[in-house]
Image (tube, each protein chain N blue to C red):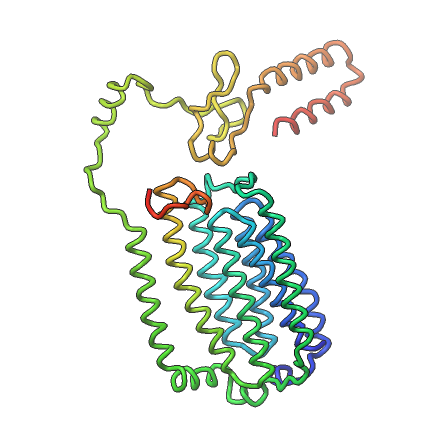
Length: 283
Length: 99
């Protein structure tokens, strides 16, 4: 491995690795900014970060490669996912532009910036790569430790102070002191009676033949789904399944089946087909 | 393959991240794009460390990771408290420091 890291020009294996994984990394990065749901963005970013960890390893930064996986994909991305779960329920990106033409301007700015960076890199003379053969000779971690605890020791100490401050800051920011007593169940019910709406508990979600799930709205007597029966979170996510049309369709399928069984005996093998299609519609 | 290609890849990732910060409105996704930019910088540092044959670039990348971890903790806490007060994680809604 150290011989590989020491090489001036990368080996063929590294080239293949670079082109395959680099493509995926760029796709992941594009997915981060283009996918609509925050969870999908987070997952594509995690993929990109894992690939970057592989690139660190290929560049002879063995310690950083492992730290990248543990800290970035392990800790930071999971923190992101937790916050997406807390916050992202109603946090769908609005597609309406608040500033007219901002998106195209942003894309143009990005393109210009990218061209600037790439042309700058193209003009720089970066031909000699020394490789990390001598620097990593005593081991990558040992080399890093020698630097951290001698040259960069003050920066290292200050980093520790920064981490402690960040921890305290996060606790202060998210901590909420309860300034009033939590209302008891009795008080809540009295309040409901006083306000005069929803005296009984909220209606249960629909339990509808083979569907016994909380994401199916209960049906009102006229067959329309009732919003009240489904949990607020599912409503915010738009994950409510509508089965209000299904009663009619099931009835139709039942009638058809009965008709086929009574009337046309020989054509029974074909009878299962419309029924199968019905099942697909129900899903 | 010339190892300079790592620098081009990092430039590309940084550009994508910067464009994402400008395009997206969801605060969490904007934050993820900032992380992408930091990661691209780290890749540059590691590639330059290989180019110069010493470990200082890796040390700086390591410090970047630590600072990024601290930044994420505080930033996500800010997003959560913003969401509590405004019931929205859109950066457009947070135009005032207080409600």
